Length: 89
Image (spheres, helix red, strand yellow):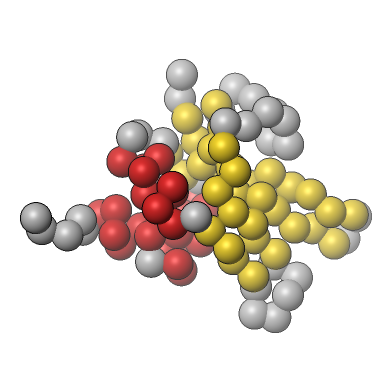
């Protein structure tokens, strides 16, 4: 089972907002998901990004693959850098 971190679309026509979810790649875009990690609203200025950073980092460490768009959002929030360069213990 390949697990992806991706966006699920919501909202009305021409007024999208997205949920950042963890889902099996075989499920439909707006279908069943394993866990909700946050929201992304591109229509606000600046775009609103809310994210459970600790949960996202946990999923990445367990092998979940983010889509390109979600990877950019993770970079914006600083989660991707924490994933690629974990603190030395």
